[in-house]
Image (cartoon, rainbow, N blue to C red; front, side, top):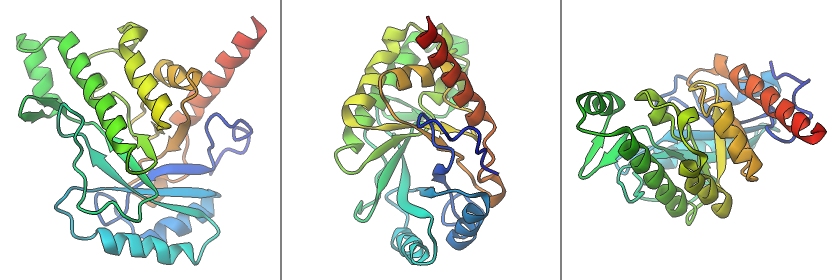
Length: 255
């Protein structure tokens, strides 16, 4: 259930889920089943963000399913899609038609390098052999994500999913990076009005990075990344991160 003791702060609204998946892509459940589950746990807003590419043919049916569900619930349902960064210049794997979307969620789970798009395991191998340096991986990931944020925000309100989560997957600790390295991404989000998803499923971003976004005025959104209705409203990681941010704010105010 949604924790009512923690939703008093606007820093992260635990009554809204900014990223859920349906059976149209990687999820298990129908739009209707997800809405019913959202009502049961007390969510007031739900953003559908199924993963798309230019090759999917179900996007119109997906949108119509959500539009029909909007007529039968008091939950605020938002129509979104998740698009992947596929080039170093921030090009995204957009579907053919972006019409009718309330939001774009940006994913950057692979590293664009030249003409290749490298899976985390491949990046790890290249780091281990010395074919890639950690500093280059960081620079590539940050610059590609910055360009993607700037590009996507031209078309629809934008959310950044799992910011720089790839770095953690390949063994690069964000806590060891100088804040100046992260500043371009934080500024890109702030200047474009891009919100940052705090993912329950992926446990990302970590509290220090989330704190930097929040300090810059970038909105933080609770995102289950749910693929099963049982995951809705089960805020554990997000609630702990929220508590740590609230505590840090209180300590700064008291200093």
